[in-house]
Amino acid sequence: MAGDFAKRNLPSSTHGLMERARRTPMALWRNLWKVGRDDPRRAIHALKVGSALTLVSLLYLLEPLFEGLGKNAMWAVMTVVVVLEFTAGATLCKGFNRAVGTVFAGSLAFFIECIAEELGTVSRALFVGASVFFIGFAATYVRFIPIIKKNYDYGVLIFILTFNLITVSSFRVQNVIEIARDRLYTILIGCAICLFMSLFVFPNWSGEELHYSTADKLEALARSIEACVMEYFQEDMTIDQKSSRDTIKKGYRVVLDSKSVEESLALFASWEPRHSRLGYRYPWKQYVKLGAVLRHFAYTAVALHGCLESEIQTPQSVRMLFREPCTRVSREVSKVLRELASSIRNRQHCSPDVLFDHLHDALQALNSAIKSQPRLFLGTKNAQANSMIAAQTDQRSSSGAAALASVKTDISALLDFRTKRDQTERKTLKPTLSKIAMMSLEFSEALPFAAFASLLVEMAVRLDLIIDHVKELARDAHFKDCMEKHDIKIDVKGYKESARTLATNVACVE
Image 1 (cartoon, rainbow, N blue to C red):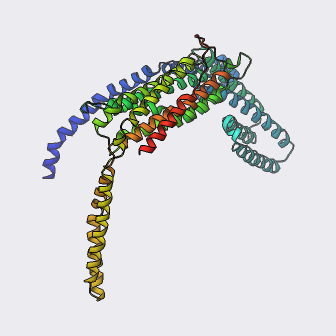
Image 2 (spheres, rainbow, N blue to C red; image 1 turned 60 degrees about the vertical axis):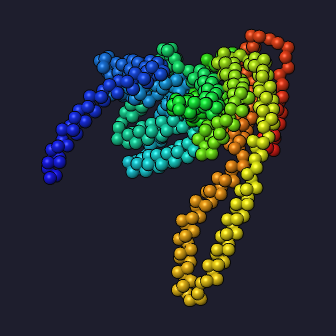
Image 3 (cartoon, rainbow, N blue to C red; image 1 turned 180 degrees about the vertical axis):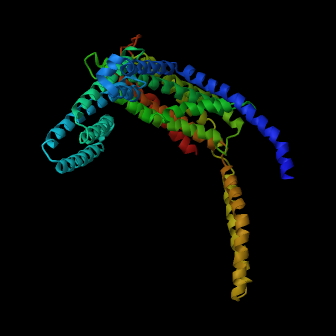
């Protein structure tokens, strides 16, 4: 029986394996093509790494160069593999750390070797071992200092590695100084090739990456808010909502997951010289601060998206009463975010008209729409729910009293009663409480919408903080003035006060 079953299933399993093997190359090719299409700089960087490895391999392949450096030429290949990064700032940081760590380690190892030569065999071994211990201990402990950990951790690691290799090998090898010199030359050659490829051959700047990614995050938040509000007020519920939900999630996730990338880009950008050529230090820390504010704003977008996933929803007929003012508020919030993104992308100050614009009027319209429908937020079913809860409580207490009165004093009968009562309560308690909770929430069909509207108002209020940070960045980075100049006084507090008034009104009707 088992043999017949295996024979029947063998052709189908074989066909499945063959089909999977046939599809794997195409799927791999599509993934590779997608990686290069999403960011063509990745393909260019791969070509740069291949070219750099080819150049540095000539030190080992060409006979004249190999005779001068010997097997130490492989250190140049290792340097290219380790140091050459995607951006110029990262390459500069790692190249500087590797060069400085190697120089300091070689110098200290030379000093240790000069002292050890004057000692005997046993004393020299003890001295070398003690030197390795104390230098390794001190260097490793220094790595925990925050500023060293942030900027020079790789250099300290290279220092430990190089020092131990030279110091320990010097105990058995006589010409260790020449070996250290050749290794230093090859490492410097590898660093030079990496710097040439990073700075002069289609360079990718960390500062530019950080700058444009900040603008992209503002635009992603704008798309997420618009898609969320559009789906909330969508009339046709049969339309596939997968694409809309993907747009919403992608918009705020790109902001929430960007903290480590922002900090790394800001660190590497500080190593790049091109941004400081105007005589001032570029304010990369302001981008990190602005990213923190955007993440704080994105949490509101996450909560707004949570209203779409809530189990308790406002009826569609009630939503339509507030569709126009809510859509107007989201449109104005998205408009401000896009204007801020454009100002950062073009490195110019924000337009005063857009910062002021119609957000104040949109919040006033939403405030008026909520005030015009007071009965939606103050239903008449609250008293019924309270009376039902009281009736359930009285019924439970009376039934419990009657049951307890009829219980015998015998211990076995009492235990039997308690067991039956616990089993009954487990079966009925959860459905009863759920029913009471649902009926108590029916007093206001607009309660879920009140939460949605409050989040929209919260977004409008938090815009003020984003605007302040963008203006601070524009001032510190010396952005150019806006093309259109108007004698208009910007008052961003106007819509903030309106937002607070609207939030108070929503709280009151709740």
